[in-house]
Length: 614
Picture 1 (cartoon, one colour):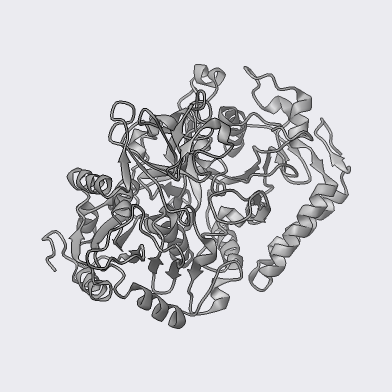
Picture 2 (picture 1 turned 90 degrees about the horizontal axis):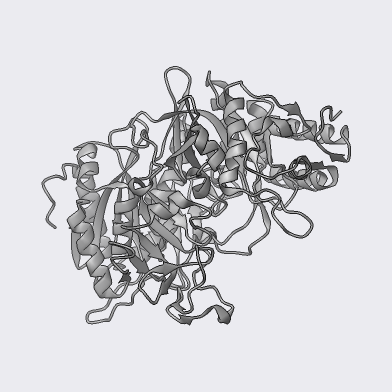
């Protein structure tokens, strides 16, 4: 095996040699992250039938991939946290003893890359050289994963140079689990339809992924390193690794406020991160800029402020529902240099999905390669179809998005997809109440993960699928770190998805979320009024800006009302989560649940906003 001269780390070379012996690839390629390498691999993927080159006039340097029908989303039931102790992994994670799991993995990986090229991909999660960043090296037999990592991370020679001769890195082992016999014809999307493992070893900081070529399972810098492994690093070293977007809000006077927000997958993170203020706000000089749309790494600074970086360099966004009407900056971010997966192909060589602007195409090729017309009644794009695009194409990219020091946070926002119960916005009474808000948030399940959809699932901090250790310890880590941060951000909860009795959304959402965001920013700087509710501090109707939107006080009350019967069910559901976490759940959580119960029972059955709600 030849090693390029820009690789100086003997430990990395030794690990790669060990994996070559295990997986027996035909070739080994060390990826330098160059544009020429990217173009070469994309051409190779076109020749293999994995990529379809899109119309260069409509979508320059862009490609469409169609995955196997068994490989379209994260496979949470095949995702494992293999801590040495089952108790450390916690009841919300799948666990197996590392001593049992590793022989299984080594058996699966034995000869798994036969007939294929092994790619060695050094990468940095976060700006190169940042004190908040982490380095990883992914070994993979998927060129799709390589070109996606080029977009999603700082990948290649530059990352290897930061690693140097003795730097620390997270080893990330990946195979699609589909070896080729001599002379065997490959398929367009190699994977193992029947056997998948996405495995994390938190004590040794290792990741092994087998059988899937899909993004969240195969791009190991993303959910695997940036959340599951990084969350254990963060717990041990005193920082946060979070499933959060980061945005900047600049007011008409030029003052910028940075906000981090956590939403479960497919619940509007990318839309919020790229929010375009309504004309009324834009005309006054309000601006929203994007630091990141999915993941935030957050460390305390010397002055007690929390600083955040986006560890990624691109967007892996859900396509359906993305349009110029809902997310114009997102659409601009995918105008070129983008990899689309499982969307429809139009007759003129462009892409299409449900919710895109304009009329439906009269004919297209759907995500499975079949002819499609609107009359069929089927989806042309998979509900979890994706775009992978560089952050630098976002016209609203924040000027500090690549700052190694990160950006200072003033507020945390937590929200899920809830048809009822949760009001439009509330601010926690204090840090501990805010941690309770985040720990008890729930969301209706979406297509981003396999399983039944539309069921309310408790999703603490939007991290249930991504925490690398016991969720009770995770909640305690938030409580403990917040106590030691002098300038802790304010904490808020939002719900853009509340519906009326006919199933219509009560709140217009999208760009109109700026009206709530303006109040959040003002509250985080001590400049806005609020009234006390049973759940926290809430804005009155007159505390939000309504210019340019026909939204009555009655409409607002419907978004903000608190129904005791709904909340009784909510608190019982929370109790079920707390019982599951009981032996490691901080006692503050039970106390705040009791205080919330008391506040609800001392309030009207239907608490509605007025000048004096008591």
